[in-house]
Image (cartoon, rainbow, N blue to C red; front, side):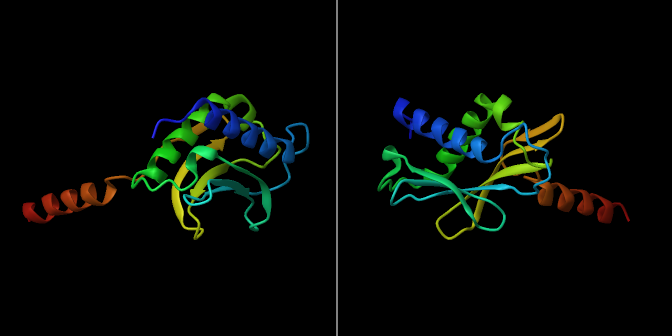
Length: 147
């Protein structure tokens, strides 16, 4: 799914509304992550804090009734790019660092970690531990075979 210009504009406005709720000029006393929920049926793009309090929402027309099997993967990749494009604003929320943007489905299940801001360190991307199990199993097999 290739995002349209309208989808990009709607997402940009959405992120700016989130930023308005956490102005950079306020002292970063609040501890929270931003939970982004996307609905494949309604096209809703919603943001929540750790207490499940809604921050903002919008409807992304392109996502309404989207039946694509790769929907959440495509949305995660798109949102990562948008967060990076708006990095200057996203890194300066009035939230105590580290904070992250987490993508969730309609059932509030974590789908992907989109962006982690931690002072000078920013982590973008999917599963940070991807392939770790295989590497550990391989390492353990080598150790056991040497005995």
